[in-house]
Length: 366
Image: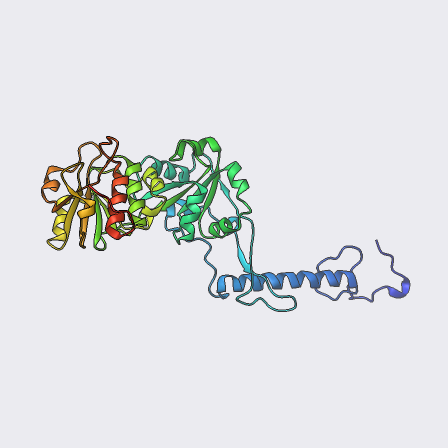
């Protein structure tokens, strides 16, 4: 306690702080406590200014912290568990737009195997919810995020979640997307790959109503999802306008196909369960149909393609459906050497598209 001399004793009705400061409604005569209170007022004022200017919003327009379109994953994602973004004010001046961003560490919400969000994740992993897909791997999730594609939720093992806590880019993602951590063994059972990287994200499946452009790749009953995904990746890279999958094709939005496509199937026009008759009616007489054959077709060196056209690729073992083959207007043959009888469907697609779009500079001879 601080001693007070008789000459310093307060008069009746005057409040004086002795020792630790306490709240009161009167005046104080302790310079040290007054300084602390002023410091606290300054911090509160700075925090209020930060909140009012975060994200360029005003006090009447609160900052939206998450942008998930799925109510399945939004519940329980409180503002307290989000990474907050605020402006860093200049020394001696108020916070203003255009200044540097300060990002708090990424925050994760812990969930167990019986949590409803984990049940929703399991439904997607088992293919019961075809409106969403799982993307496994930090690199692919980050690439899609940079393209402007926002996941509905992110799940990581506890160990990986701790390692990613201070990643500034993912911290900005967690400000908009619910992020959950769960035991590693639970994630391993739900992950779409045998050896998961410890982090998966839920992405919505795009819904395209009709083919796009004048160079369409049509897949007829291609059953391996890795082949379907590889074709989408090749078509995207070599300038095709869309990929259309017939009934009986592997799901181009399954986790395995999305991984094989390097994520391109989530932003490139891809349609599934599109019958040949429907596509033939849609193209009418405006498109020519081209297919590849092991032998007997026009050599690539003699082919003079004209758009618009549809490039049809058949089943790995059976080739094209007879009805579809009858509607083909041009058949092409890729010359092979050393007794090789056929090519993988994605490889054949790449060769044909490269020659069609002028991406290859080597002439093939028959």
